[in-house]
Length: 161
Image (cartoon, rainbow, N blue to C red; front, side, top):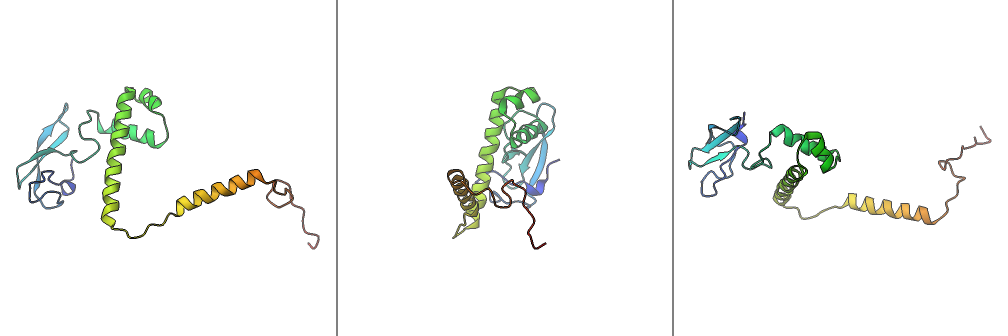
């Protein structure tokens, strides 16, 4: 069942366009091969639309569980061909779902970042990565002493103990 409070009218001519929780969205019926997807409508302008209209799932003719599995496999680092074999799908279908989900995430993230209206940005992670790379590169070029604790050699107890 679709959470109607999270849905909004996709018609940019509607006065309730993009507004959530206004009570203007209702379920008009079901659609799809097994009639499991909700067809919604805006009570303000009469526009009908799919519940998945503003999601990465819109227009993909796969069950939501299969799409979830594809995205989960991609997040875990499983390759496209391996995912296709595991789920019994064509590799082009898997690739299309991954690309569509990635593009959708990029649009959502871009929208969220723009709405923050930031004036400054701090790049700690980038600095830490560059700094670490410099330290690793310096460690390879110079022969550090192996007599220090933590160098792999057992440390000898201090004579005062």
